[in-house]
Amino acid sequence: MPTPHDPVLAGKKALVVGIANQHSIAYGCAHAFHSLGAELAITYLNEKARPHVEPLAQAFGAPLVLPLDVEQPGQLEAVFEAIEKRWGRLDILVHSIAFAPKEDLQGGLLDCSAQGFQRAMDVSCHSLIRMAKLAAPLMTDGGTMMAMSYLGAQKVVPNYNVMGPVKAALEATCRYLAYELGPKGIRVHPVSPGPLKTRAASGLKDFDLLLTEAANRAPVGELVDIDDVGFACAYLATPYARRLTGQTLYVDGGVNIMA
Image 1 (cartoon, helix red, strand yellow):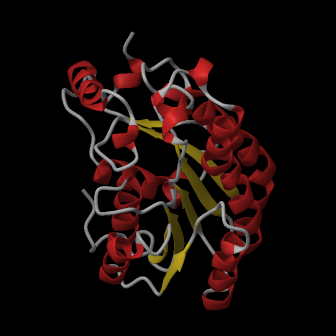
Image 2 (cartoon, one colour; image 1 turned 30 degrees about the vertical axis):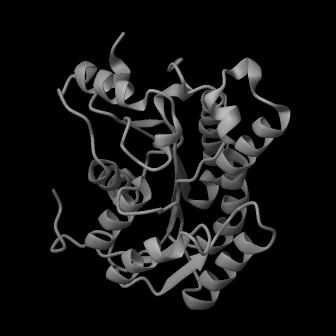
Image 3 (tube, helix red, strand yellow; image 1 turned 180 degrees about the horizontal axis):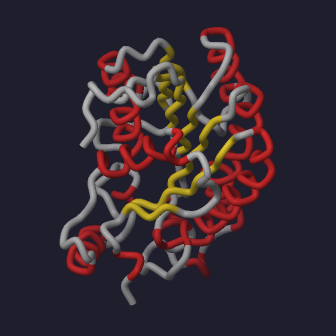
């Protein structure tokens, strides 16, 4: 595993959206980027989340720690205004946020309300488009954008419900953004980690069974962790991945290849 002595991201500026605590996939990304030399901007959802996120950001020496609820008008624009003022540019963007109302997430797709579907799609998918539009002008020397998906976007995973279609839309969004932003030297990646014990995953019914099944089916014989995901994302942000864009990267121990 790379160490702080391998600063392949030295000088890079990275915005990481989606840290809730030290178990978050976004935290794994921030940890990897920081250990490879990048400077971080980190967001927290609201004042309730702030005490959990701020100490983590401080440990990384992040000069920008900002509130971001993509459902609140103006907050997204404020984040990018702060980045432009502080850095004048951006190299890496991680979108690791998703939401669906509990009653719509835990019921079957047939019972998902139009309002619940709309909120899930807005927060989990369309917010990436809004971020990309604001980030692209700051990626003057090219850049890398990443959004977190899951196997349920491609195959039916019991109890994943409305998030399956939403993540499928997110992966398609990444492909179309990769096409539109490619001429600017900006690469866009949907990243699909295996199941992880995160705060977001706790809302899924029978999630422990999903973890057990994934561990049993993975060719490598064990689950991935947030550092596995973080360093895979760090690789995508390096020049080593300069010709890769738009294709879903599975970081799941090989679960996705199994019938």
